[in-house]
Length: 140
Image (cartoon, rainbow, N blue to C red; front, top):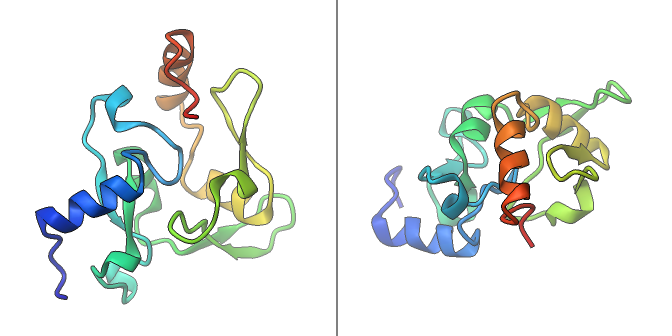
């Protein structure tokens, strides 16, 4: 397969991701913004547009991720591969803080990804607060 992502492939990736960002779990139906089909290993780093390298990502996570494939764990200082939403269970690496507005990294991978992708950026946290008040967040 080339570097293009067909409509059918996009639909398969979106269905597998349950219409949510693989990193911050933002639901496309709640956010109202179309998710990006993200290259887990960016094309600039040799990643392909094969389905096994694609997942959904919100615009925030995708823009912060850029071409990163690893980041420094803020607790240990060790460089760690970023979370792979296709291969790693979210719940093993992240948790929601009590008010469901902040994502907490539970592992070196989780902490590095929270930091690198700015998963608690000042734009998304207030939106999560409103979504939680409406009963739409966090995703089940």
